[in-house]
Structure formats: C-alpha cells, structure tokens
Picture 1 (tube, rainbow, N blue to C red):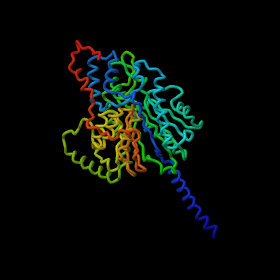
Picture 2: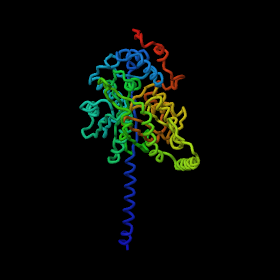
Picture 3: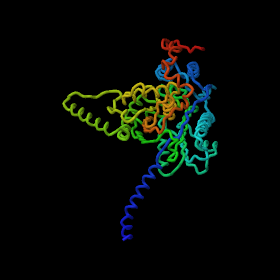
Picture 4: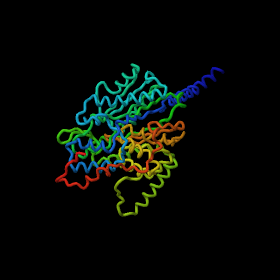
Length: 466
C-alpha cells in the first residue's frame, strides 16, 4: 500500500520539482543594475561660445553660407556652453588626428568612470564575469574591451564583447547581450561600458549634411554594473522588465539616412540626411507596437482598442482623406504604465517629436532637455545622463517604471522598461550642479555674438581676425 501511494505521488512530485526548477531558473535570469557612473570630463575640455567660433574659423573650406547654416543649427540645437570636446580640439589638430588621440580619449574615460564605479560598488575587477563595450567610431586592435581587461587585470576566463558601428542606440544593444548571457549563467557580474570616440571623426569639409554632426556630438560616456544574482537584489537600483529592438536596415531610405561616408573630394564625415526624421518615426512606431502591450495595463489597451474601433467606424462615412503630416500621436496613455521617460538626446527635434507622439508634458521632457543643454548629444551614453538627472532630482521612487527610448544608425529604435527597486537620491554626475537646473532660459549666446553674420554680403565677406 505504501509503495502504491509512493508511485501515485511520484508524478506529482516530479511536476512540482519541474515547476520549482523553472521558477528558480527564471529568478536567476533577472537583470539588475547595481550602480552606474556617468563620465564628467575635466573643465579644461569645456566648450564655450568663444572656443566654438575659433574651431569653425580654423576650417578654411567654409564660406559665408556655411557659417549661416551652422549658426542657425547651433542656436536651435538646445545645446549650452558647458559641454565637452576631445583634447585634440584644444590643440588645434582636429583635421590631423592620430590613432593615439582616439585611444587616449577612450582611456581617459575608462580609467575615470570604471574605477569610480567599481570602487563605490565594492566590486573588484577580478569579480567581473562579463564585459560589453560599445564605441561606434573607433576600431584599433587590440579592441577596447581588451584594453580595459589589461588595465584592470581582469580574469582570463572573462567573456567580453566589443561592439562598433552601432550608433546612438548601442547602449540598449549591449544591455540585450548582457540580458541574454544572464539567461545561461547564474550569479554573474557584468560591466557595460558605453561611449563614443570623437577625436578621429571631425569633418573638415563643407557638406552641410556632414558638418551638422560637428555641432551636435560631444564627449561623454557611462559605465554600468549589472548582475543576475538574486541575493544582491536589495542592493540593486533597477530591474529590467522588458527590452525591444527594431531594425529597419532592410529599407534603403532608412539605411542611408544616417551613415559615415566620404564627401565629393574624399573627406570622411558622418552624413545626416533630410529623411532622418521620417526614418526615425517609422522605426519608433514599429517599436511601440511591440513594447506597448508589454508595459501598459490591460485596461488601457482595451480602452485604446475601443476608441480606435469607434474612430474607424466614424471614418467609414467620411468621403475626404484624413492624411496628416508631421509627428503622429500614439493615442495611448503611456503614463498608465510608465512613470518616467528617458529619451535619447539626439537633438531638440527628437525630444519634441517623442514628447508630441507620447503626449508628454514639459515635466516629462525636462530631464532630456537639461541633459542636451548641459552635456550635448553624447551618443549611446546619453540615456544614462538623462537617468542620472532624474535621480539627482529625487524623482525615482521604489516601484516606479522608467521607459528608455533610443535611436541609432542602421536605422534602429531600441527601448526598454526598468522598475526602480529602491528610492534613489544620489546625484551621480549632476550632484554638484543639480540645484542650477532647470535654468531660467535654455537660449545659448551664439546669436548674440555671431548674429552679425546674417547681415553679411557674400561678395565681400571676410572672416574677422578677432
């Protein structure tokens, strides 16, 4: 009888064991951020109005029309006077960079931010199991991840990935790699390093679509420490809920709108096409279609479906077209499932466009606008400066959800949702100046100093010595 009872219970025990194993494995697949450190370059690399004027005057290929174009671009960019440039700019060698310039720029960032991060987290470099580095515009054997391993003397069995050419959306691509590795290995530490090397990539020509990048991009970077060790959950800052990647590389229009290339006489630069906003909108819409059901409550999804059906029914009787131009509103209340919006600082137009589409307030957009003003577009690392601003403002409370949205060459749109594990109040890179933000005005002084260019006659224009 006891044997018979045991045989009856055995299948049930096996099922329960499998369920327990599935739940336990699922818990070990979680992805937590323990800490992160944004990079703040030295003050001697700060870019002001006067210095920008000097750099532009050094380019002998520019004429009055290009000066007017650049003035209009920088005035409307949303970028302030405290952003940072690589050291090569201050020595006047931007048109003749060396490999060492690019490596030095990256090593200065690595040695500052990674060191601070690991020291504050109490984690030894020897404990890092996974290293993912993304820097799009420099490739130099040995790769940057190997240089980090060498500098910090990390373990010989460390798993490392070095991503290049991924553009401004590379942070979330690197995060996706970490997330997938965590699914196969338990109790691991991962170090994600994201930045951009500007030293070798200054464009010295006069193609307007390529000199625009000189105005927008600035130096920056971030190091992020992650784990899937559930015993460290109490120390974690954020927990990854979901991540969605959208790639429109198969569309020629999207593929070619944001690309590194040579101009007509062979000068290399980064081309930003006029169809870039259209490509970004397409990828953004497709990304939202996938991530929206994952992050919003069922009640909001049902409400949206009912409203959409009613609108569609009402349009059936209309004989006129309803085509519209410009940004399109999503029609969904994203605030029903998201508390904070971490938007890539690709430019003022990018922030405005996402704000309009998601029906966000100026309060929601403030972190992105302030980051663009203070640090400029730091490429893939810009999301983390935006997140740090929210933390410095003490906005991030336990249980809140943060939606990250980024765009990059390819053309790509990547997004993810984080849950805040505990109340966060550290200022990170903003801690010494957060009290000054937002300023009374975001206007920069470029028009005040260089506005006279607008009235100049091309036939007799000469660049003033001062």
